[in-house]
Structure formats: C-alpha cells, structure tokens
Length: 451
Image 1 (spheres, one colour):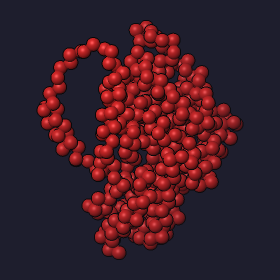
Image 2 (image 1 turned 120 degrees about the horizontal axis):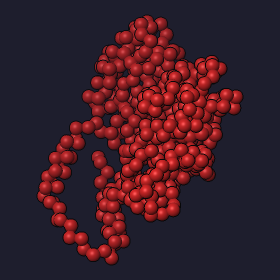
Image 3 (image 1 turned 30 degrees about the vertical axis):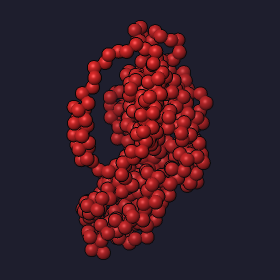
C-alpha cells in the first residue's frame, strides 16, 4: 500500500508556511477549478497505475528507491513557494538549505572545505566534474573502466574531450594491470574511479589507483553516484571498506541523493575538494546576482534554473536521518547489503544457477545453468517473465562471461557475454522479504527449467 498517513502533516506544515506571509495584502488569486482539478487528478492516478510497483519490496529490478516520506512532504511543501536555486533572489531559504545539505555530504567524505552544489542528476554532475577536469588538463585523455556508466563516454563526446575505456577484471573492477599499461603511454589527465558500478555494484581499487596518481600526476574523479553512501555502512567487506576510506583523497566526487539518499528525482550532487576550481565557473550576469554579496549557487554551476524544492527535501531528510555511521540511515544501507548477501548465498547453494562474485554493495547478478551461454541467456528472459507474472520484478543485464567464470563449469562458451538476471536490493525492507523473493524466484525457475 502507498503511504498516506503523512498527508495530515503536510496540511499542518502548509498552514505554518502560510502564517509567515500573513502580513501581505490579499492577492485576489483566481479561485481554483476544484472540480476540474479533482477530475484531472483522478485521471492522472488512473494513468499512473500503468507502472511497476517501484515502491514495493517485490520490485527488485532497476535502481528505483522510493523517497522517504519526509522528502516527499518537504518537496511538496516547497512547491507552494516554488523556489529557484540559481540566484538568491529566487531561492533565499532553499539556497541556504542547499549549502548546508551539500556541506553534510562533503563531511561524509571527510571534507571540511569543498565546493559543490546539487544538480539534476548524476549525468549533469559528472559532466561538470569532467568539464572542470578538461579545463585543468586541456588536451589530455580521460580514462574510465569499461564497466563505468555509459554516460561518461557520451559526456566526453559532448565536451569534445579525449576518452578511452580501460578493461575490467573478473570482478567488474577497473583492471590495475591494464591501467598501468595505459598510464605508461602518457597523455592521461584524469582517471574516473567508480564506487559502485550500475551493473554489479563493484567498487574500483581506489587505494592502488591513488598510488598510481602519485607517480603519474593525473586528476582523480570518483563517480559514486550509486555507491557513495555506503561509506557509512558498517558491514562492508574489509577490502571494500579500505577503498571507501580513501575517498577523501580524490579530487572530485559525484553522488546521487535520488538513489540511496531517499530523494525524489532529480537530485544529484557534484563536489570538488579544492574550492579554487570555482574560478572556472566565473561569468557575468548583471541582472541576476545583484541582491547579495553572498555566494549565489548559479555562480558555481553550469545549470541555471534548478529546483529549490530538491534542496529543501534533501535538507529535511538529512535533518531527520543524519549521515553518520551507526545511525538509522546507515542501518538502512546495512540492511540492503545483508539482503544482497543472503540472496547471493542462496543462488550459490542452488545448482540450478550460475553465480557471479559476491556483491560488494547490494546488487546481485546470476543466471540459470544450461548447456551453453546462448541457452542460458534465453532461459534468463523466460525466468524474468515467469517471476513478473508472480509480481516479482527483476532486471536483465548483458555482462561479460568472465564475471561468472568460477561457476561456468563445462558450459559451451558460444558467446562472450551472458544475458543474466540482475536484482538491486536497495530497499531496507528487502532484508525482511528475502524469503519471499527467493520463494517466487525458485518457483519461477522450476516452471522454466523443470526442476
């Protein structure tokens, strides 16, 4: 069921907000067409039923996590003002709330000084980080793993920067040997490290890459759009924990609060360790930045108009659920990882399935065992459909067969990639639903595989 108990709190908050403007004269706004609005909203609700149940624990497919009720309410409350966080004239309170919320994100990575702001999402945040990288190292190549998000290649095309992919190892992490060979050729200005790939949740070997930076002098950008919050989790594997402990040493970070940060779309964030990069954003706008000598967020952003409501929602969420280790927010991340480890172990123990490496965060990939890779791929899609008919919604991914090499056995390797099943267990509730998820998956697999 959709959460509705918080609606009374929204009405109370609207009344409090309205009281702050009580001194204004009546504006004689036109009376809303209440009947018309009700009719359109009913039609809208009916159209929106044509969706997968993204809010429910039985949705375990793509990276879709419902916003926290406080985020929904704070976002809706801000819509009665509809602030624009470009200039302080358009969003005084919400700009201040954005600066505070972004500072809390920076502190999560160990930065007391930083430059940063919210964006429409991870793509725009990564674009800004790579734009800065290109300004600081013009003409030099940007490297990222072949499992980094596909937008990195597109972003560099938009920015007209040189870009190359570096192969991954069998655990979907940037391969250090391949990176060393490419660095030895020279002309590298920036290396992108992914802290939680979108396909498998793999974490690149940041500690070793930092050592290579000391030798080769490249800029280091961290794409933590998906996995950045997991530095707060207390149940990471020792190797993964080591990588997160070094995030304070990178030059820039991207994180998406609209993923594990419990925010509505779109809410991304870009952070720079050196505030001096703000000089690269300098531009004139004599009709915009006139109301204050304080920093206008538009002065450090490539985007102009941005929703102040996104900042309000993030500020409210972090006020309720502080970004601290051992806190309620961190506990939710730990539950997600526990759910993924549980599901992965069940798959490993079941001879019907091929398993990949153990999840570093909360993403599990697997496939049905078959005589060949081609046959397994076809069976994956059938299990996907069978599970969906029982209201368990997974995802399908195309991944290199090397990610499954330890469980392939004597399967015929007639393809270099495998169409597999992918489950993103990013709701804390997934920990309590693992039994039910496994029951449906097992029943669906029996229908398809006959065993």
